[in-house]
Length: 233
Ligand SMILES: [Cu+2]
Image (spheres, rainbow, N blue to C red):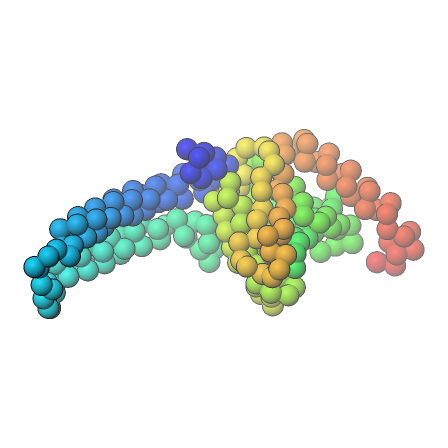
């Protein structure tokens, strides 16, 4: 179904897509019924010579029915989405042992802080890469995300994942990618004039590829840093 939403490549895909298509079908049916009614009544009650307009109060029965049906439908969708919300964003949803990265959004880029060869975030061997998130496939990943200036939104359509990142707050965004490949990260919150170009990529690697990439970039970062600066850290 790639023509409606992109092929999903995270563990959130089945549940999110199920809800998405249920809502699409319900709203699709409502749309068709409303449009048919609109066209039918526009034609039926069109102005005609000799026909006078008259005042009507409305129809209580019809109003009760369409309000109740809508309310019940919305509540059912709400209840159905609770377990999905808890899995993706629940208070304790981030799996223990998830690989952690720092993500800092600013006008108009995503900066990713990598844990470096020691696997620990916020240590001396960390390095940063602009607009590129590289992760291994089939591993739980958590992004410790924040924004430097205004509200941005971390959106990876292929992961079915979207989260606002807010200045002064640390948002924990987790996912588990299921297929290697490059996928687009888009900023989904209008954040300024350059919002349209606030685009980055997440590259999902096999574990071997990822280890190799990380080692290469870490070595590169090490050699770019001044030897004295490394020693003083
Ligand atoms: Cu943005």
